[in-house]
Amino acid sequence: MRLMRRDVLLTTGMSALAVLGGGSAVFAQGATPSPSVPAVDPDLMRFMDISHCLTDRTALNAAIGAALYAGIVQATPQRRGQIQALYDLKARERLITASELAKAAEKADKTLKDAVHDIMIAWYRGVAGGKVVVYRSALMFDITKDAIYPKTYAAGGPFYWTTKPPEVARPTGLPALSPSPFVVEPT
Image (cartoon, rainbow, N blue to C red):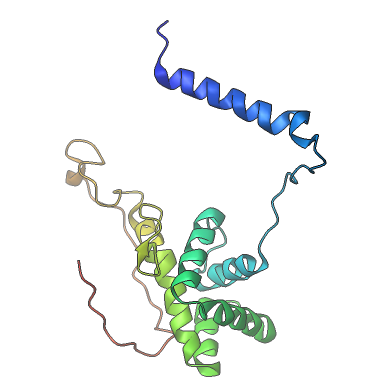
């Protein structure tokens, strides 16, 4: 069996983690070990709750959510308070669907509409604060994930395009928010 550089690096790295993470010498100076479950940021929890409601999805990736939230708040600091306001509105009015929350948010405060847009753009396009946070896991690709991966070539193998694609139900809903100005982004 040939010894490869990656095997050496992996073995060395795992050994170092085991020694540092499990060794008692690390805590000899009176330091306390970190808890096995990291503390959850309440702002992030509110963002995830609002995200579940706005996307009408029960399962969203928490790591992606944390990165999107950080990007949104870093780019526009007032979004933190607006996300809190959305969360409070959702709880107070007992709103369940994305449409209900979006309509109530716009009615309560016009600036909340921009917060709703930022959250939706972040999850569906993978862009937060003008920076790409996630690409392949952006929700806009979910509708075609069974047929083709985003921006790849021949993902289905040779002649995959010759078979009929799966049927997709046509959306029947109406927009929940009033029209927004059209913004052309540079490509």
